[in-house]
Amino acid sequence: MDTDVVIAGAGPTGLMLACELRLAGVDVVVVERLPEPTGESRAGGMHSRTLEVLDQRGVLDRFLSVGELQPVGHFSGLYLDFDESESRHPYPLMILQSAIEQLLEEWATELGVRVRRSSEVSGIRQDGVGVAVELRTTGAESAQLRARYLVGCDGGRSTVRKLSGIDFPGTPATMTALIGDVELPDLPEDYVWVRRCPGGDFSAIAFEPGWYRVITSDYDNVADRDEPPTFEQLRESLVRLAGTDFGMHSPRWISQFGDAARQAAQYREGRVLLAGDAAHIHFPAGGQGLNMGVQDAVNLGWKLASVVRGQAPESLLDSYHAERHPVGERVLQNTRAQSALARPGAQTDALREVFGSLMVFDDVNRHLRGMLTALEVRYPVDGDHPLEGRRVPDADLKTPDGATRVYELLHAARPVLLDLRGSAEVAAATEGWADRVDIVEARSEDDRWPVPSVGEIRAPAALLIRPDGHVAWAAAAGGAPDISSLRTALATWFGPALQG
Image 1 (cartoon, one colour):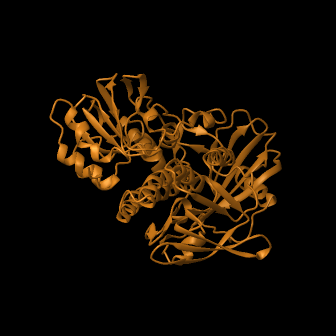
Image 2 (cartoon, rainbow, N blue to C red):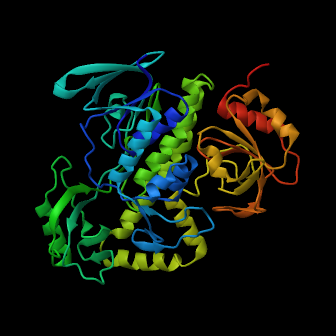
Image 3 (cartoon, rainbow, N blue to C red):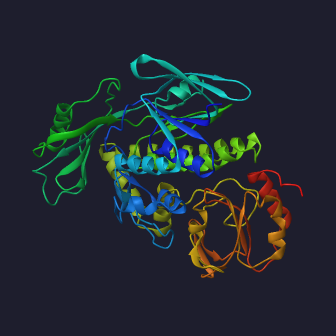
């Protein structure tokens, strides 16, 4: 084998997955068809759950130093309030995708990830022990890499998905949006970021002093996606909607998107897996796409590493589809709803007014907020403790070595058995997994822990935390821990216990 895992695509999803695999000691090569990063701004931010994931790996400060926190969000342009009690990082971080990719690639390089540019996947051949990946390289030369697994993180038009024969069902586009990073010297100072018009809507968002991201939406008109849009088309679209181009000039980047919503029928075909836009595309309402891709990578990374290292059976990879496919379905549904709410017309205006009046209620706001930020995601579990399946709160802890917090225990991307009551029985139950699971004895500084969609709960007696920060098993405070269910959870997620 040339490497353990080949990842196709050096975007945020592929680079995050590469970092996760390297943290687990897996050899990985990222292949990217482009000769160098484009520098195009593309996605513009990260939500709470993605910020938590980066915090769990100890690299969040790199991103906070570049981006800007914004205490506002929206659902189809209707404002959402954020609750500081739900996360240590409740607000979206405005940061361009180009900066995200640069920071992730720097981290990946530090970890020893190899990135091969000007290398496009052109063929795949699987057998019982690995995957042969054919590459088209600079000058149309061909090359081959052989790996145990291949992961397609190569975008909505994924070559890996097509070569693997994975269906991509969904709904076609019904509109076209043009997007451009430009200078707008004549934009009024009192401009509100989005305006609805009889023929569609337009928005202007300031990312840096002197230039704006302009988006115009044209409904019931589907452009040819193979025909690149022009600056003049963006200008004409803005004039048609706003009556002026606000002096627009000096374009940095022009692109287009629609409201097509499609999802891979399966996220795994043998030794080939999909993540990010290769697995799902949707209307980019609420900025969920990049975030969902990074979270795909963090869900898959530790599982794939465990299988590659022989610690867990290959069947563990099936849980990746079982957990992430429903998350993708929910995002496709909420973005379809946001696209419908954005359409022009008196009926939609009335619907937005009614919808907006509901959003003043805390429960409605909380539900939509949890949906967009992914804080409310709960994976299927057998247990009934309210934390099981959910991401663990970042509680303050006191350990024999001093004060810390839960997320600092996850920097190494290893499972953690957090014992908050000093139970000898719990510690003894994990002995067969000591090579894979870190056992930490601590005390919670807080008696109550906040859990989105649930409210505050009493701090648990013990937790088994997966490397992605989701709780695999929990023991309630005040009762005897169920050791049998703990051992079942350990075997299910981290493979059989070592004997002797």
